[in-house]
Image (cartoon, rainbow, N blue to C red; front, side, top):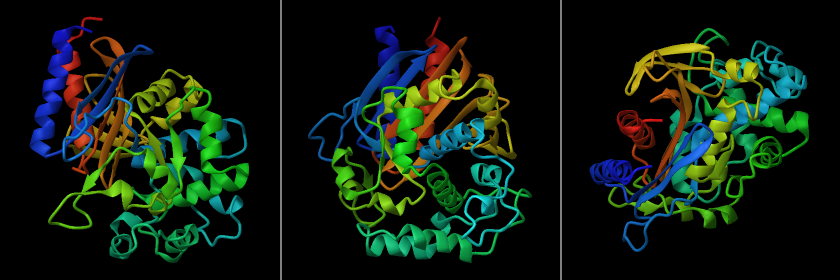
Length: 353
């Protein structure tokens, strides 16, 4: 990579960080199966005491859903699960609507509501950020809530649906989510900084992440305040280089077979025009940018207290298969996604591969 291209990327990120009043960002780019760029830009804290490292650890928040979907589809490919079998068959003790199946959970078409949209959830997080609800409380919230629509007839993003999915995966495999993802993804890819976070002991590994959620008048480092159990469907800690490696490996068919990957990135529901997306859809654990000039761009965003994260695969960016991950350490909505597309445009203009 030329010095000029490196400086273009760095300058663009610095400008975006200033605009968003965010201390730092980390980006990783992989091209045709190889690491192309890993860069920390800005600072790891508000006091600018230390530069942010390219291997800084973040919660990847809802990008975890893509990893959970990978695990589920690996089990489908082994014949352990079936996409169209009712969830009740796997979790008979739960009073789950009989029409909901695995495909519905993976694609957010189950009709389950989202705890992220419930005031009771946010009030509880503010009241006791270090003491989360139990998994049973989250499950009961799903089971006691009316479905928003008949399963398979509409789309609504649902963290509760993925709570049910996590319980299902752990039940049928008799493994924790960490053990399952380690077996299917982390160990085969030789990842050393990526794991499922379940306790406050894990947050010591996190780079500071800033939010005004707890106090509108000041930014606070959520890493010392926010228990990962509040993200009950599961939240992975990772680095930009390792997350980029996962997403790239998926689309190079190094984790799942090509036909299974094709199922993941086939649209289940088309959402329409969305900022940065020509035509947005959702597949099985993946957002899909249809009608992109760079091929069918696929990946996921992760938004939560302290961080904004995104990781996307561009099958034809300047003639190359390119994966970009971007992490920022303040929770400005879609900032990670904005950086992914800024970097993609710079690469498209500058690369001659």
